[in-house]
Amino acid sequence: MAGVASLLFHAPVMAADAQDVSAAQNAEKPRKYFWSGDWYLKVGAAGFYAPKFDGSKSYRLFGEPLFELGRQGEAERFSSRNDNISWALIDNDRFRVGPVGQLVFKRGDTIKGLNDTKFGAEAGVFVDVYPTDWMRVRSEVRHGIVAHNGVVADFAADAFYDVTPKIRISGGPRATVASKDYFRTYYGVNAEEAAASGLSEYKPSGGLQSVGVGGAITWATTEKIDTSLFAEYSRLQGPARDSSIVKERGSANQFLVGVSATYRLDFSID
Image (cartoon, rainbow, N blue to C red; front, side, top):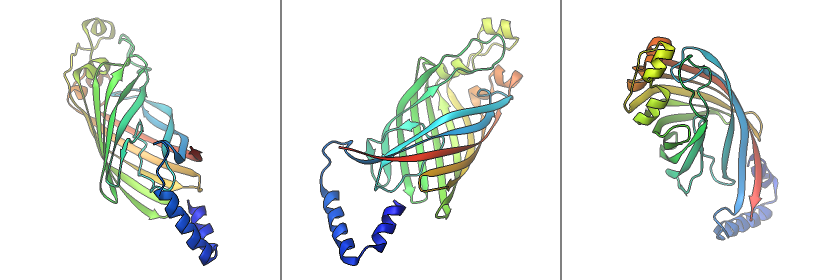
């Protein structure tokens, strides 16, 4: 949008007035369909160093794709690397709500004797609230599909500040709660697993999984490319912290640090 603003600035006054009138007329025209109009899609990837699985004391490098979809011409919303893929069905100045989802991968390298977890997904609903122009509060509630039969809810509050027109800092607290079915999939140890692994048998209930804090520095490298440096710390709580997987072989302290980059594509749909 910076390129468009520059073009209008250098145009003759009468031409600019005509364009303003035309733009206003176009803005008032109803869309043919809810998906009609000018859109942008940000695609990219993140690489980060994190625990091998939740509760692990061993770390390794991970990679993940990043996507963000929005309308051109609207004020670009604050987004975080922690946001899962979502679509705002209701969107106004202070409130957004819609479906959300993510892929869930196997636990990977884990303790010998524990059953493998399954690849699957989680789907649910997200809500964004903007109490001020410099803060966003987000919650996601998701149900497992194939990977597990539980429910997970993430909560985050981020304050953000533009140090320069191209550099933004952001950060704030995070928390996650989950149902007993989720905890039994990723933190439970049944009698057979206990005998095979040497861990104590453990059957968790639902509750608070973790609390923590995270932050990021984002740089608008070019008009199309954004890059970011981010870090997170979380402390496992309740049923997660009390798991024999964590107490006997892992750690309740979980750290993550990484970098990301996205590229913006502009397109139109009739």
